[in-house]
Image 1: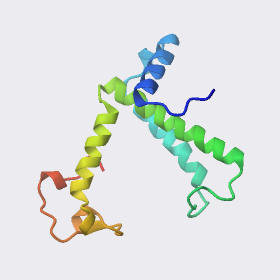
Image 2 (image 1 turned 60 degrees about the horizontal axis):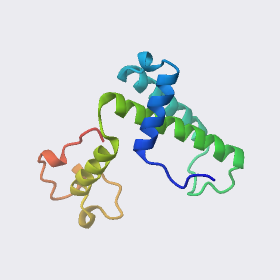
Image 3 (image 1 turned 60 degrees about the vertical axis):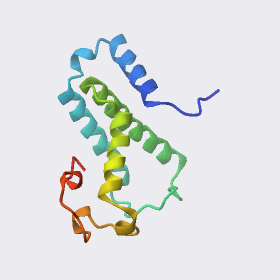
Image 4 (image 1 turned 90 degrees about the vertical axis):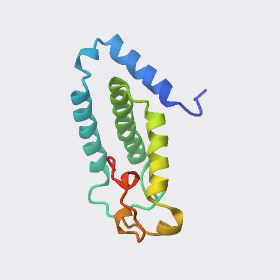
Length: 135
């Protein structure tokens, strides 16, 4: 029976075990993992290249295309999880914190329905909470 969902912690453990079984820890430096991640993002981008805007749900895409997309998305996720583990960053906590910061940076009353950057909103205080921290 297929598992309904998976946690970041489970992925982290599976990736660590996978690397250890193959003696790949020696190659998994932050730099190497980041470069591998960037390469996978490039492969993911290639899937969408030349397609123009693609509607949600990918109507008209063949099953094979969607499967390939899932594989490339998975590669990106797995390298990201591994990189965060090697760097000692709790990715789940970091993501939740980033969402909290973004909620401050992009208050609903100012940005709802807008694609403007936070620095373009009236009333931007310019304090440290508004500084772009890797976004």
